Length: 317
Ligand code: NAP
Image 1: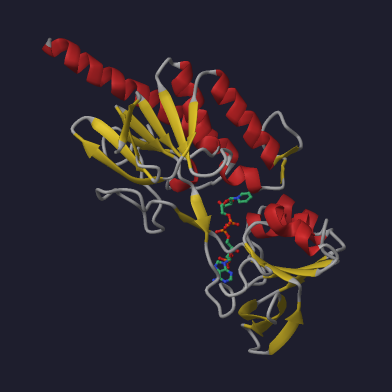
Image 2: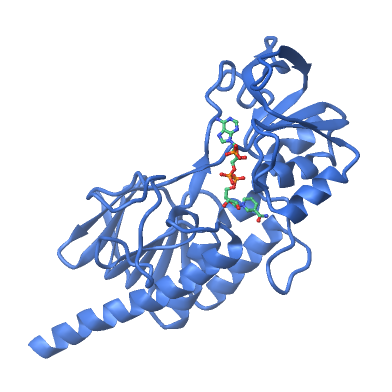
């Protein structure tokens, strides 16, 4: 039988935005639960080094994620490891249905489900996923010690994680479809200065090739000259962007052209009482700093939303 649990605020997703929202909500003495399908920390927990979070010149993503978690728990945030399958409204309740069968009900909900890595969509990618194709340098980098590693993409993630992979690989090729990176200049400079990194410009991966067990090489095509060639590698790390995780809504919710949730300045979505924060939200930057800012605003706005509900009920009595 389904288990029903009642809270003031449900937070869906335990990344930096969700944990910060949870910290503020619990600190405001609202009974708050954060539902996270893996370990809390979100994307930051699988990021090598963080050096742009104020107050921490250098900290590993895993450690920062742990600090966020401990801090939020200290103020009373409850964290449950469960996968949210669906969220919906039932009267004034905002409801989350979980894979365990549990049903969580609350007066307000904050969605901070982040995003998932975009697939490259080429032949061999899925076949060799886990056999040399990876989307997480911190999880899998150490398997490719002294191997030649390729990274595809030109954004912050590709360039930063490419540099991180030079700790393991004998050489790291960064393959980008243009001749200019999208990554922040400081991240670019560090990569250009790294003697183990080599850039392959104007080039796309056409297929990932291998034997029975592992990736052995990539088929590449230069998009300007049309020239094709093979590149021998032991691994391919794919960092070609992010897709927001918005598949849990039963009712339609307003999103932008990229599928990111549109909120107002109080982080409220098009569904009253459901707020969004962090990478899943439509905005210019996707950094830990603005995820926690979003989380703060969402928690305070959710609190005000609940107060309005409570005032309305009190006036009726
Ligand atoms: P991103 O900024 O969207 O960059 C994706 C990269 O992949 C782009 O260079 C794009 O090329 C390339 N690309 C897209 N589709 C491709 C395809 N089919 N084949 C080949 N290349 C393809 O994504 P991201 O790097 O994952 O970053 C996501 C967000 O997280 C960004 O807002 C980023 O700033 C943030 N982030 C920040 C940090 C940090 O500050 N330290 C670290 C990681 C992520 P084009 O350039 O040609 O479009």
